[in-house]
Image (tube, rainbow, N blue to C red; front, side, top):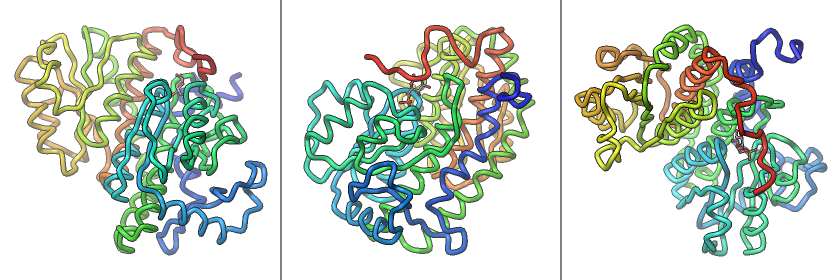
Length: 388
Ligand code: G6P
């Protein structure tokens, strides 16, 4: 087992540190680093079996994929757990960049709510394992209702991968830790390429914007290395968390699903009560929870929503909440009002989520391992939920 952990104390820690490489591998097939353009490779909408994807005529296959992207009027993203939070980031990306309406739903809700799936819908399922029962049922239902389906899986040739019309891959390599980390960041990278591809195909994004976004995406792996090199600060922040009664993770835009994911990681690993909330909803309830025994974890990168987020943060702080914040670069303001300020490098809003989740993963990891919990296999949880 030690060999496989390559000197890391846990698989989860190893997988957190593998993320820069995993993200690079996720985007590599789809991005041309010379022209800074995107063309999705081997998606296979033509009906090829998963085993034959590698043999596709790249040009013809991309033309077929573009045909699908031109024809769609709606996108649904369906997944469970951490994959669902990646899907929520995808919703912001695809809707804002490609201007197609996107709905993101939890698979167990989607499959039982008799969803209306209009013709010309693209139903995207996200599943690391490709075996999650609810997600599988959702994709089968979407196919029956006439939708075109696209799976984003990590495990090639898994059941969901085989059943989808089109296929994208996380390319993360095997993920052993029950709590998903590298599959999550890889998926957000794939969703970036997908959003750009749909936007360009539909003529709603300029070549210049594509170049800018691709450049920012290509810079992410080395920026992630930078974030990982600050681990000692995340560990330090984690050491102060034991004393809190509860945790409120908040953010706006793509930082909202990151807040949800951060709270999920704390629950899964450290067995502490945490809630993920849209920062703008704070006034509608969570504010009542705040006192000095409540930690506020605010995901506040410098983007178009930053000012709004800061005003939420100040309000929470005024009620006595202790603040841990994630922000961009050397942010004096956040440093001043936070017990712990954790910095990520300056990046485009489309990739901030990939960077901002790393401090949250590591904080939960350190807290749980300091408490002596089994971080690779948290109690009561399974890596893949293949029964309802
Ligand atoms: C389980 C795992 C999570 C994972 C979720 C969805 O709950 O513990 O880490 O996010 O299933 O799994 P999937 O394989 O469909 O992405």
